[in-house]
Amino acid sequence: ATEVKVNEVEFNPKFVCRMIPKLEWSTLVQAADQLGHREELPGELVPDYEKNEDFLKKVHRVLLEVEVIEGCLQCPESGREFPISKGIPNMLLNEDEA
Amino acid sequence: MFSNIITETRGEDTMVRYYCTAGNGMESFLVEEVKKKLAARDVHQIPGKVLFSSSATIHRVCDLKAAERLFLLLKQDSPVVMSTHTSPAKTASVLRSRLLGDRRQWLSAVMTWSRLQGELAASRSAVTTSTTHGVREKGRGSERQSDEGKKCRQEFRKRSHSFTAEESDEKRQRGREQIRRHALELEKDDDVKESEEVCATYSKKELEQNVESCSKNMKNMDDLGEDAPLESVENVSFRINCKCSGSLSRCAGAQEVSKVMGAGLSKLLGWKADLKNPKLEISVFLSDDYFLLGIPLTRLPLANRSYIKSTGLRSTIAWAMASLAQIQPGFCVVDPMCGVGTILIEAANEHKAACFLGVDIDDGQLQKADENTAFAELQGRVHLLKASSKALPLPSASVDAVVCDLPFGRKFSTRVNMADNLPLILSEMERVLCVGGTLVVLLSPQLSCLLKKLLSHTHSGPKGNKEGESQTGIKNCLVSSSEQQISQIKSSSSQETLTISSLRHQTTLRVSLGAIDGLIHKYIKTPD
Image (cartoon, rainbow over all chains, first blue to last red; front, side, top):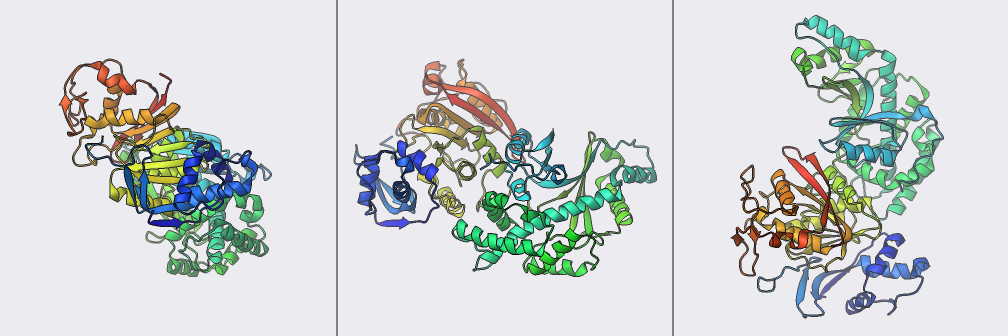
């Protein structure tokens, strides 16, 4: 990523809790790492995270506050890169890819 | 938040009777909403309107999402019946007796209106005095704002004894967010100069204690909008807004009714009619089934959201669609043709623990959606993606709900015809939905027809669609890689039923979108 922004977003623990089971944790950590915003995110999901406000806040930060404005997403399988511009990834496929 | 409805410590006399106008088809949504959010009683639905009583704070009432405009009910009764042969004098007399009625009733209604306006204005002032950068600033950090707001409110309390708005701090906290939003909405039509003029025209007569304290507060707030509480219920300037329908309109037109009412009111209460800048607007609805008299409580319709910058779909419809999707905490909800994001924003504001993804193919729309999302402060939970609804970059069965306003064919991108692409778009929507997930779509009548056909199990070849606008009934679109439209008219059912077969139809609702109607379809994905 060439431009990353950190927003201030109101912390909603319930929301973060609900989102965690839907995440691919290792991918999240890797992405955060690549952006240089991993901070103290553990490599593995902390057990009993619902009560761990400290942990939830870290997840909140990475999930909701760190935003890639310019950069790209890369498909782990094909290596195909999808550009991100003004915070919005462009995932339109070319005609020959569909 | 809405589960702790106000405990009834105050008793019956603080119940206020309101009515809201609602777009056609929205009435049942509104009925459900007032019952759920405002613990409304005596809810009564008539075409285009919902009447209800509630003791919820005015901010909560103003936060209704399915309503168009909000009124304080003055009077409601059986229809005014007159024959066409009635003389104008007799007509006037009938109108006066039926509609005007009791002086006390009017005064008490106006007092209630004034109290409610005071409550609305009080919170607004609390918000504005707490922001340092002036009136228009949205303010960062709702907590800080509300803390300062609380301080202002406490000051208020010292000044006014019977200011009912201050009665419950607890209610304030719940209404915090609504206060902020609504306050900003009211701020939009702030006209400081006008309010000063209005103040000047009032007499200094003070009737009751609460009116007195209202006026004290009014003088202390320096940038009030027009809807300030009344200093006195004498010398009120008013305007009649009348709508007549049905057979009555043949006997007495809206203008005539307005005149009679206007003259009558002036005589009854000593009020002055003012067509340009009235303090009070009286709304009169006369139809064959009933008549309604009310006072609008807000200047702008509730449907004008303070948190949306660029509008697309009418916010009330967007909200209704989101409510149909029965979004639960933790849900992932996708709008594959999100446009400026109206549905996502309405849904995200209603469901705070779900996350939303908007997909659109158009940069301009996405840009506006981005602005809207930021403006509504929802960046963390609403994400945007540029992609094609015919090839969603999402894994199968990964989404809990899909809510979408399908372009009605005319506004869609120049190259393709919506009808031709409907099968593929639907199929993608179905694919990404997990089992048990909900699909809610808004369609034009033609597309609705087409969709019904697509999902039925009988397929016969091309059928002329009634309007003839969209092409023939069913076309098999083999969207090959190099061509967008190859329509092959085959009567093969296998093509159609492939991936759309697991959608089970739940309901179809007709709603008015203004000039045209739309149809909302709801489906659930079944294991198949």
